[in-house]
Image (cartoon, each protein chain N blue to C red):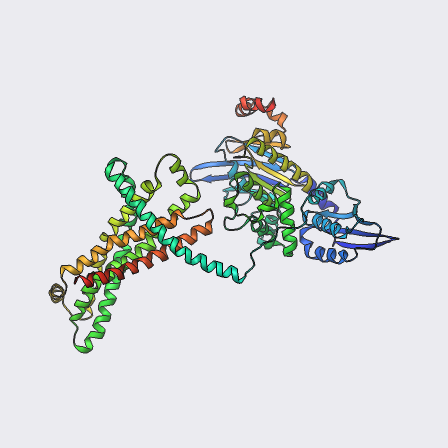
Amino acid sequence: MSGDPKLERIAKGNALALCATGTWTASFAPVLERMVADAEKLAGGSQSIFIDVSEVAKLDTFGAWLIERLRRSLTQGAVEAQIAGLSANYSSLVDEVRRVRATPVVDSSAVTITGMLEQIGRAVAGVAGTVAGLVDMLGAVLAAGFRVLIHPRSFRLTSTVHHMEQVCWRAVPIIVLITFLIGCIIAQQGIFHFRRFGADIFVVDMLGVLVLREIGVLLVAIMVAGRSGSAYTAELGSMKMREEIDALRTMGFDPIEVLVLPRMLALVLALPILAFLGAMAALYGGGLVAWLYGGVDPEAFLLRLRDAISIDHFIVGMVKAPVMAAVIGIVACVEGLAVQGSAESLGQHTTASVVKGIFFVIVMDGVFAIFFASIGM
Amino acid sequence: MAQETQNAIQNPIIRVRDITVQFGATRVLDGLNLDVKRGEILGFVGPSGAGKSVLTRTIIGLVPKVAGSIEVFGVDLDSSSTSQRRNVERRWGVLFQQGALFSSLTVRQNIQFPMREYLRVSQRLMDEITMAKLTMVGLKPEVADRFPSELSGGMIKRVALARALSLDPDLVFLDEPTSGLDPIGAGDFDELVRTLQRTLGLTVFMVTHDLDSLYTACDRIAVLGNGKIIAAGSIADMQASQHPWLRQYFHGKRARAVMG
């Protein structure tokens, strides 16, 4: 019952007759398309045109459409091509494809110079949009914060505690481990290079200042941006996709107050704690390496540490932490709420959240460095 | 070859035997048997949570079963090779409850996705077939370049059906195709399924809650309860049944309203 499809021309006086046989289905589509293209060249010069399909064994949408395509291209001027010998089974399918509009809507996404310039323009305008979005979110969060201060009962304690657990408590092991290792590496490198000048003991100064002022808080902020910033974006983004945020709004809740504020607060409280733990772990790791690898015994290490660093170094580190947390949180929430309907969009915004979060953390760190240097801390 | 054709007509297109599916300690399907005949529209009903979707997902291989066998197009899906299975998958289309359109692809790309994978067809033919499919499911060609997030619920269902039909399958699974549609839209959809079944010679396995669909679209109805098929037959058989759930379902207020 099946067989390779064929399209043959039958001599029939002044008329053009084509006889289709075999299986006209999707699996033979390349062959069929070539045959139909060849047959299309026969158009013109005939009084009447017939396409005989009585010998077609099997027909599906692809085959039916190709016959319809042939019929349309053979139809020229007053001569209309006819389909003959259609079995009852397939007549409704052929009728169905006959309703299809001839020209498919073409994709108009060609690459042009103006198009490229337009994209550059849009990207630049997008930067301004990003900054405006961040300022907007900062304002919204502060406004929600004040509203909560006036009506403390609307504060979502459970949610805040839950997010504290997620971003702070559960982050402790990995943060402590990584900062410990970084402390070890800094001490080892310091000892290795300082030993040449016989300045082993100054590794303590370097470790103390570096860890308390910069590395501790910066490293922890970057890890939190990767760990919790991305989670916030993905959570809010998928809630946005499934219209949960619209649902909240229609029930008279402010999504900023319900979703963003507890997350922001959790992050602002968590980052100083994590930064402190991270700094301690790094100092501990550094001290351990200095003792085991550099032969600086713990008592000498602590004595030197007390001389080398002042409380200022510690304060500088700790002051930066909540500000960085706020930056990470705002970026993450803005990106989360900007997610559109598709999975791809969720991925893009989560990536953007982490990249922008880390970028702004480093920019903030630079701004703080200039500020503290000019006030002499 | 004549023998083969004969078998194809006689043998059911889906043959489910003694299927048991368990999630933890709860047994959802318990020794279930079901046949779906070639060319029919089978309506599959049952109380919420009875396991209608689970059975559908088990047949198409998304849920693992504890025991039993499933044959589709005469191929036992457990003992089949990867290429046999691929071949079966190419011949069926699935319409998921929520549409399950790829959200990062346009309507056109969604419909062409299976074609690109399985067929070697020119872009022109794919575009034209896409338009044909869209026309068949009652959509305008303009929606082709929209993204799923820009479509209404009814349009999503229609596009999902167009995608399920893109390879001209012999068998289509519809999981609650009319849920979430307005009655007129649902009626149109039933009509559409009927028309497509006639024009394309489809076999349709339809999970539904919609009494209208059962009356207007389905040739045969199977009822799921307690992990088994408790009844299967025409709508008249269902109405004559003495089973308490069936009596309630087919003689309740809503059923009377549908029957007029």
